[in-house]
Amino acid sequence: MLVKDLYLDCIRYEESSLAHYIHHLLAEKKISIDDHFSQEDLEQADHQKVAEMIQKNVLGFHKIRIYSLKMNQKEFVFIFAISEQEAIQFYNQTFKQAPLNCHEYPLDFQLTRGNDVVSFREMRKEFASFPAIAGDFKMRYKITFKIRNC
Image 1 (tube, rainbow, N blue to C red):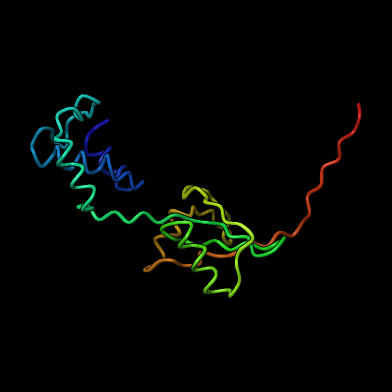
Image 2: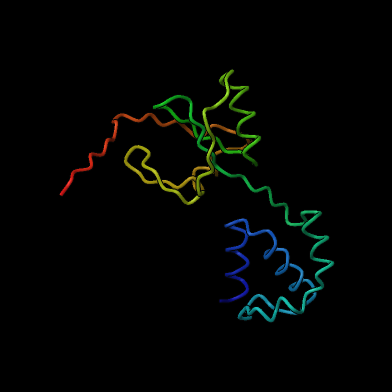
């Protein structure tokens, strides 16, 4: 894979560590944007410098995740937040009660919105600040399973 494509993927999918490594290697001119990236390229990096870059968050990563918080037996709310604790705190402040549970969902999880299919990753771009409520979900049907002896 070309360095430029991998770098863009790292930014798109918020792979902070690898993005900082690539940034460092490009800045030190140990690789170029049009090279094919390989595992050996990482061995050329000054790991201490990259660790400092990651610690300082030179590339400005602020990973926002999506959490499903259960309101009651049939209702859930989805909240964009940096951490599970932040999502729960925001839920408590907004709804004046504790959620029954909290689970992280993958940002690439797709759901139907109107006539379109949208991922949480795409949806996140619609928000300017976080934490934020992405939406809610109400279960309409009770699913039951019957086990029959054959």
